Structures are given as C-alpha cells and as structure tokens.
Image 1 (cartoon, rainbow, N blue to C red):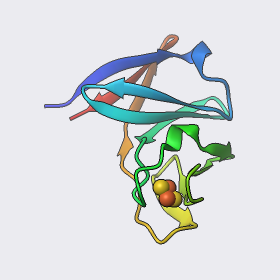
Image 2: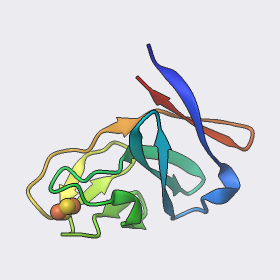
Image 3: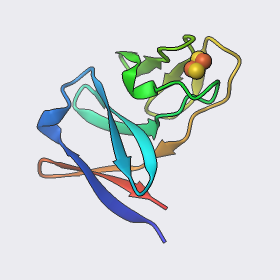
Image 4: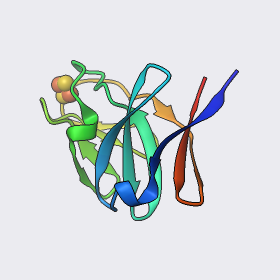
Length: 103
Ligand code: FES
C-alpha cells in the first residue's frame, strides 16, 4: 500500500535547485523546475552517484560523478554514461508542504 510522506516545505527548494530528502528508507532527489516539483531516486543507475547534488538545467540534471543526464520530470536517461532511466516518485503539493508517494 502506498502512502504520501511529507518531505519538505516549498520555500526550502528554490526554482532550478535540487535537494536530498529521505522517506521510509528511500533516498530521493527532489527538484524544483520552474515552480513544479519532481522526485527521482538519488542513486544514479550508473554507479550510485548522488543526483540531488547534480546541476539542474531546465528539466535535465547532470550526475556529479560521471556526467550522466536525466530528465527529472520522467526519469528518462538523456546522455552521458551508458545507463538506464532512473526511478521516479509521484509528488503532491498541499499548501506549502511537499509530499512524495512511497509504495
Ligand atoms: S555515477 Fe552517475 S554517471 Fe556515474
């Protein structure tokens, strides 16, 4: 059964930035793309690099370790190292609170 876990407040994450959050044992990279919030696994599929620490340009984050790129809105692999898509998590914003759905 899935549940929504509160992970942050909207003011903590400015547009164009990412942050690491944790929910039920999951390490999640949360991003703000022009006021919309998206969540992907913090672990890069190439070699577990910390995607929350990657640079975000538009909706593309670049892994800080070897440069793989992912679309944070879909998890799709976009370039760099030969890797697969990264897991995504549904995000829900209620007032100023950000929730992530965890199964
Ligand atoms: S760990 Fe992310 S590209 Fe290598």
